[in-house]
Image (tube, rainbow, N blue to C red; front, side, top):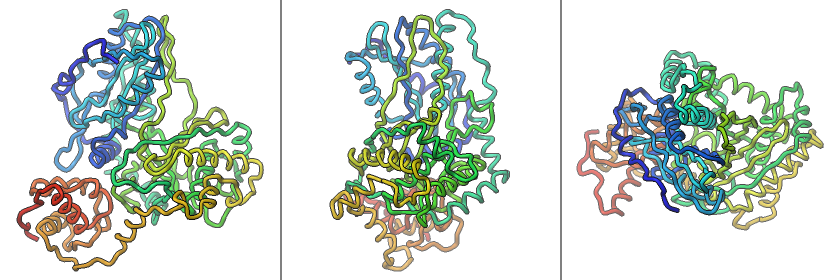
Length: 576
């Protein structure tokens, strides 16, 4: 692989004039926090690829890309810590480079290179948060690759990006006026509006619903094949899933009262598989929704997608039809309260938190409708989307499905840190088997439905595949152990954190065994404490601060890490 054209230095973008800064959206804050906790990874990179076969003018395509970035402020934004908050900083428009890379070996080699380029992390503070490349397979055969950080983009936004890029190509080629209308809003306008909605109390009824619905929720504990590693690679193993239209159509007619969609059918079946596999009858599945309540938001690029944590109760061994009615009702309730950002649901629900684990939902079901991408025609060029397989996974399990009428196809992905490829196949087979059996006999109790992944676990007995997650059990034991040494600070670091917790959490009494989130902490307050401690010479691990923790736990970890590195933590106690 050799570069055929010199790539413009990114320093040109980095030094571009900064126009203004506004508070980041709730979703951008979450992305920023997740990046700080998992620094150096590329877990939150959105990817799209488009194959273009025919005579292509590189300069025109580069100018079209520059125009798209000029239209959408969020694509020339960066995220920075600004005091105790995260700001989105918008830069002035300017030329955007589209480097050309020679790729011998055909489309398979282009997909492999896309995976390699996807692993390069973004710097949220320095930017840019959009990287595009033109992979040249032959003189008239190219793959356009777009990599965008999730903090400024979502799945719908990738479609907007590609549609505008193709619509602008020929005007940029011929020097004519482009057909796109001026955008009515920018992403920053949406972020400000949503903050105002929250501050005014307009979402309080919705927040109360989520707090009540998610009270006491427990973490999903899937039986891992492999010990949970200290450092995760975040790679995935996947297997295909397919449910024929007659199967899904029959199930849609099963629930009393009707009103069941294909995505609700998929959610009910996925919940059955998770419950049978884990042995848990009370679980939460994250359901992504578009998060664009107004039509003026539809033509924008940005991070609008929201996650609805759907809590499913499978206790009492109901029939699939009964479960499907419950899932329908809970989805309808959730859809009508989808304005609340996931981050605020977490704060209201106060779930258990653990370093390196996402709160509330450890699994995701993403069901999209199959609709044409709506690309503009380019004279003499054939346009074809290129499927890019999953290369990273931040959840333990994800089901990515597509509705095509009543048919559902897609794949199940599991964390390769925890599960084998064989287990991914079993989970995919289980999802299909539950759907087929339930469609034939919807009155069948959930425990009687076929579930190969649960059967394999039961048959394995004491084999490693059925062994408990020892790291998780150790964590639970440590959390519930009786603390030693009382609640008074004993070391300089503990004294400092006691003082900081009192100030940031606005409480009068703090013990070293008090749990941060139980005292009213949240993610941004954790960031404030990390920042203030850093100013006092104490470097705290943000990933641990974002999980449940006490002062003694954090300081013990910090001092052990400093000792291993040959450093001191803090020289003298702060006033307590």
